[in-house]
Image (cartoon, rainbow, N blue to C red; front, side, top):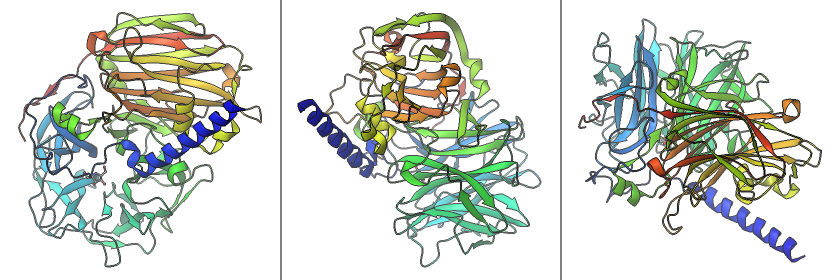
Length: 587
Ligand code: DQQ
């Protein structure tokens, strides 16, 4: 009886705690917190500890949203929100880097920064569109003298410069302003434009009362824009929609399609970043171009109960179509788990995730993601582990590689699923993260928990487990939970404001067919990006170990379920650092 009561009490507590966290931005640093004391505090020292080895990261200071990723004449461009003066959000400019392979980068001077009446108080996020005649154009949010959020355009000063170093912001800006009845402090982040039947269209994120809005604008010439009578889509009780992204994915195959593609062979995705939770959600649905309406499928819902591209530290993401390789690529900002004062002490904050190719699952019910192929050029020393049986309580080390900077791919093969533990009906209304916090990696189960212990110290005083746990529901169906749990990632005292969530997402797989499930983790000092079941569920964790650093970091395979699991194949690579040119450029 007592245990029952305690269980219920624990559940109520966890539920209340998760409501509290959702109401309070989940503890993830918001991009718009103003730290007036810190935002102009230049890094005195840039601490190398925890800096990533192969993720995109400038040499110092704060970064947030990836902006206007694009491919132009053989070169990839990545712009991103950057504070040139400090390691917390503020003084935002559009930093600019170029690459031939999305892995090795060359830094250029900032492309866009506050200088004109229409952006004097801020140059915030936006997107690129390649206009006919192969002419790139950027749309971005400017904050004008009254701090109104308005949409501006910028064009290259010299189209024949292969790096498009310099960008001009013509004086006929702004091109889209909020109308009287709109909230001008919640109106930002224009999308890549798409073309249909004589008009360009863009979305701008916003909110009306507490309703999240994807405002729709149309233009014939890209300069004169008219607001459509209806937003493309909106949803109640979701708050401000930041960084909307609207794009088609082919119904068959993995090839990407141009943003303007419509028709029966594609499905559309609308992704929004919810300012209130600092997480992103997407729906899949049908776009009706004649009416300019988007209707989500009944398999995907708007808002906090919706699907997520990544269930971890991942925000303000953006996709672009890469015509050179016929694929759609997703970039996201892996935001910090550290507190602002720690960021200041480190001299840096934020990284971009490894670019991922995105496509539609064959059943059309979700987006699938996988790190771009080019990442494999960084793979160095390789080790294998095959047909390794892992019994309950066992953890087997993957030796020899640099475990703090590695890429690991593993396929687990499971025995009988009969022993899968019951999915407590009380959990039905909890989100995946809360379920993971109740069933962490050290709590024994039936089938699982099994997976990887990443960034682990030798004696497991610290570790970030990335694992699966198989449940059986009342209806005798299997439900697979994937977790990337930061709770034990650091020995730093809990009163230090380090965010250590038990990130998790359910995985839509039918294990009964072949009883196999795969996992890939990109481990990079303070980032662990994981791809479950071939990229169906993705989770990024930002972690700050104190022991499991550099050569003292270890990688293990583990199983805490009564049923043994077999590592059918595992390959792990030490990862080399990419080339990053001009990293000392002062801006
Ligand atoms: N970050 C930008 C905004 C956007 C937010 C400002 C999302 O444009 O809404 O740095 O992180």
